[in-house]
Image (cartoon, rainbow, N blue to C red; front, side, top):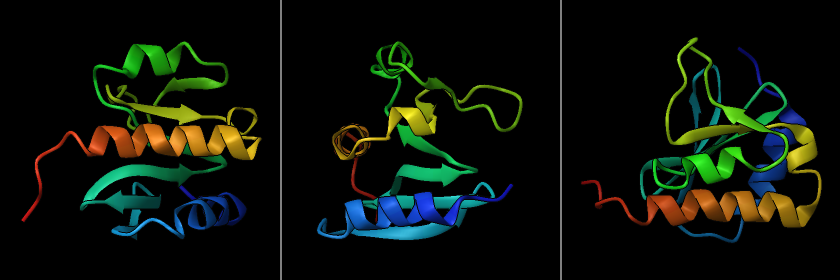
Length: 110
């Protein structure tokens, strides 16, 4: 799978001021790691957000989302957000914050 470089650049800009974020090639796309855990990424023209199991159903109730299922099997806790779902800067920021919020609940990695 490929990823849309313009979408990746949107995420790079959104993460620019946040410490501890690394960019990594994953899933045939690009992932943004916070505290060494994936919190967001880009596959094709969609963003991937790791919302965690508790917020998964809430995230899927939002417009322009669907389960992350690039292997054919949904990955619970991860959602795809289509371009219309992150069109505004505010929407993109909210999605990113959802990913950061979940990763903050995870134990530190060594």
